[in-house]
Image (cartoon, rainbow, N blue to C red; front, side, top):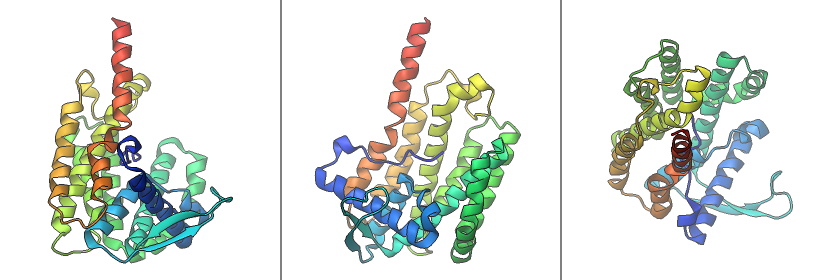
Length: 275
């Protein structure tokens, strides 16, 4: 369900692209430090956004250095980390763990089962560090599974549950910004859930899989998605961010559409050929 919160590199300056890549590499490095090589394989753009957003708001001290890694063994690449990168790495692991659990429960995937065993030690550590976030994520994803099994076709209901996941995930601590961060995350979570359902709709209908948009299969979901991301950006623009605003705006105004627009064009062409 993740993989949508990314940059649009065509609309970023070279310096901003390099900074974003350094933050991404920093998250990868911290995943390795805290959760080993299998933790590193869970790396996502989505949690890079979380790390960058919270670091922009709270402005912790940055560590900037160079490193080689298994993926880039020949030359050193820059990385940037903050204390918030550690939080993002932990949340990255939690979401990967529950994604593997969902794959195991749905398909009895042996790959997912193996990954679960590899991630379990890290999960226990994260649950001890962040019990509130872990409990919300676990309970909300379990409720989502129940809705899927009940074939819930009111998309607002599961979208709101996934919004709860993202809302809680953005609240790193209870302070003057926690309510606003929760609203931003909840709106982003609803957007992600509906976009993912829209992207998968044709394939799910073909194979008889659950999709909350089944009853709305002939509707263009662009307007709904625009409304949802607008709720998110409204909260975003009200935050007193201290750095990386251009990169974060690029993600929320352009990057989140990177996968949807080509898919929409593909579906439109298919309909045209069918007429």
